[in-house]
Amino acid sequence: MADESHHLSLEEVGRLLSRQRQADLLRLAGLAETWVRGIPRRDAADLLNEALVRVLSGDRPWPADVTLHAFLSQVMRSIASQWRHEDAREPLAADHIADLDNIAADEADHDFINLTQRMREALLGDTRALGIFDHILTQTSRKQACEQLGLDATGYDTARRRMTRTLRRQFKPGWII
Image (cartoon, rainbow, N blue to C red; front, side, top):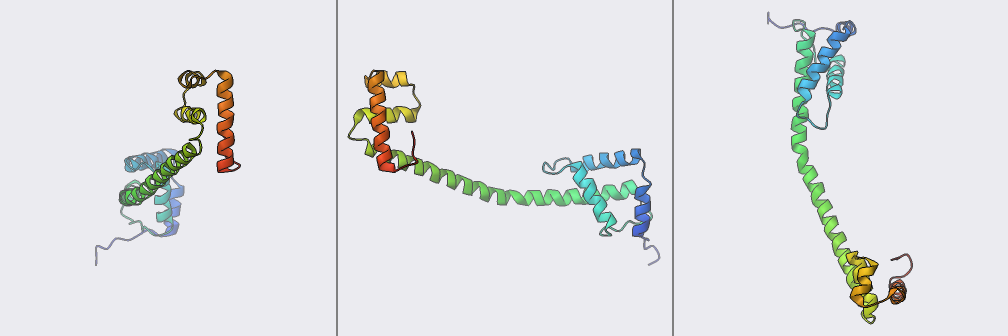
């Protein structure tokens, strides 16, 4: 083919990139900012670096008749498009992880409900201790618990100690209220 374009060698690419001024590099960074918009997990520096890696490794041959900025812009566009497609597929995996998290949370809730039910059963013989246990779970104040259970401070402390002893005996060491 007579119109087949000629590509720059890796040495020529390296020379052209090393000659870039600060203004040229800022322009490339601006192009990277443009192409990376809408890709929340990536940033412009990653995009520009990836484009340079692909060009300098020879994965993306540089046609001799295309300017530096136009060529790198198209390389970044291609990479950004690839990243968008990857990110569009990833929510499927994330949904699966979220489902597993929900299952684990449901199991934890079930375990908590089961534990509290077993603790209530252990305290059935002592209505005051059971009442204090329920107030602790609902996070009401000591004053409110005393008023609702008809206890003074000493009676509350005594019933709470009985509750704690009963639960420690039933649920072994390591459980503290």
